[in-house]
Amino acid sequence: MNRPEREKLIIIVNPVSGVRKNRQGEFRDIIESSLDYDRFDPVIRFTRYAGHGAEIVLEGLEHGINRFVVAGGDGTINKVAEKLAGTDATLGIIPAGSGNGLAHHLGIPLRKKEAIELLNRDKTLRIDTCMVNDRFFASIAGIGFDARVARQFAKCNSRGFLTYAKIVLKEYLSYKPLKYHLKLDEDELQTEAFFISFANSSQFGYNTRIAPQASITDGLIDVCIVRKPPVQAFPGIARLMYQQKIDRSKYIEIYRASNIIVKRKKGKTVNIDGEAVKLDKKLHVTIKPSSLNVVVP
Image (cartoon, rainbow, N blue to C red; front, top):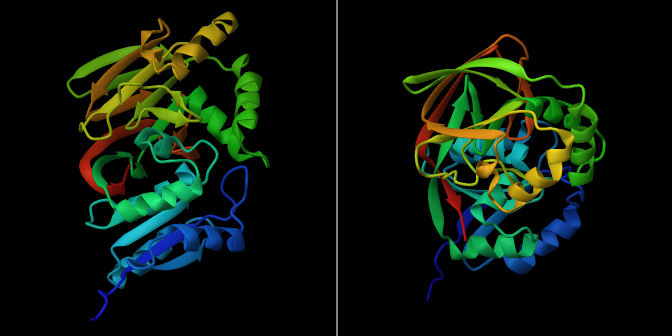
């Protein structure tokens, strides 16, 4: 009796993602002990430079491969997901970054072995993806203080929550809120904000939820407008974030829209899935409903 042909699978690994680097030998051992080799025929590719993951995906799609897995953080996932959005191909996620915001939102286990075993069960969800101007994002984008922190975080040699928290505290006192004009579908408003997040998923990472009611399948973006809180309010805000109740804070307003235009006088940096990117002062944020297949629990 002939065995069914195994499905080809490309596993894209960013070896420098996260706090603990992905050593090649160790990673291969986990794959071999956790993935169903009777069903899958995996090829493991380690990225060598920025954007290499996207190139691997395009090469795989040209050869008819329909299943890709990313081991990395939100930035690595972003580059791969962008090439898969709008196709029938499926994305699997092995959380291996610092914050792992998208993985947290989707409930994907943070332990590599458990995340790989999830691939064997093959349950998928068709999720929304977003664009800000010509840049893709799967989880969250932000402007203001959020983008300042992302820019400073990118300059650091060390990663992890402690590094992130130190940057927040260092930059907080000197950062002044900025004025913005927003058009949210047909509604318009003027506001002064500490930062504004455009949330497809619920959180930045590290289980810090800025948009606790955000759905990744509702065709809408949660627009979170945050006023600068006093230092003494920090403990209460942190508690609400981790309790998934930040929307109850008097320092935040959340709107939902599918088509957003932002005009700002200052600041060109945008936080896109954890990466600091320079864009025009005028931003156009849109959503592509049900555009990406992702493996979920």
